[in-house]
Length: 121
Image 1 (cartoon, rainbow, N blue to C red):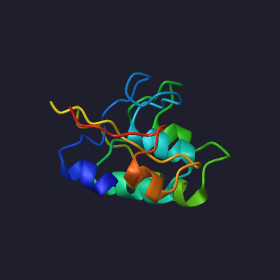
Image 2 (image 1 turned 135 degrees about the vertical axis):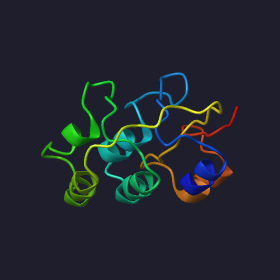
Image 3 (image 1 turned 90 degrees about the vertical axis):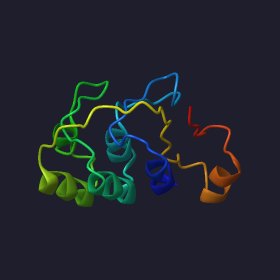
Image 4 (image 1 turned 30 degrees about the vertical axis):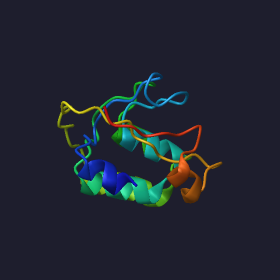
């Protein structure tokens, strides 16, 4: 799903907000993926050039967040290996990123989970 959103022109560093993602905003898709422990999502976003220095709503960057004790070791290693990278800014298209919450399976997302929707404007 994330690959398709990027294919459609999403900015991997687009800021989220309560208006676009709902509760639990983190700042960027990378920060959200780190916070949720989504190893594959972190790997994908870093491969696509996601910046690690943007500050989330709690004031931390990805580089700072991965130093927390609760972060998955594999995620910590990936982010530290990439090092500090600047975000690329935002594009004209607004894409709402979705990193599935634990209550949704991929089939529910495909059919339109009521808690996580993606739409392109």
